[in-house]
Length: 106
Image 1 (cartoon, rainbow, N blue to C red):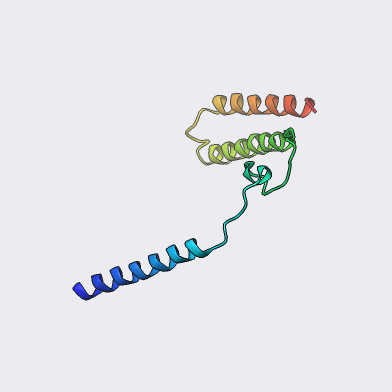
Image 2 (cartoon, rainbow, N blue to C red; image 1 turned 60 degrees about the vertical axis):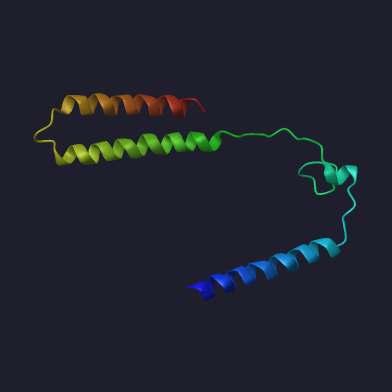
C-alpha cells in the first residue's frame, strides 16, 4: 500500500517537472490584436445575423399531432368496451381541427 502511494507521488512529481520545463522552454506566442479577439483564431470576422428557419418546427408539430392521435386511437381501441367514446371523439375532433388549421396556414 505504501509502495503504491510512493510510486504515485514519484510519477506525479516527474510529470509535473516535465510539464513545467516544457512550458518554460517553449517559444512564447506573439499576441497581436487579431489573435486576442475571441473566437477568431487570428481572422477578422464580421458578425453575421443568425437566420432561423421554422419549417422543421412545422413538420414536428404535424408529426406530434398525427402520432398522438394514432396512439390515442390505438389505446382507446383496447378499452373501447369499458370507456365512454364521447371524450375520445371530442379529442379527435380537436386534433382534426388543429391539423386543418396548421395545413391551411402554409
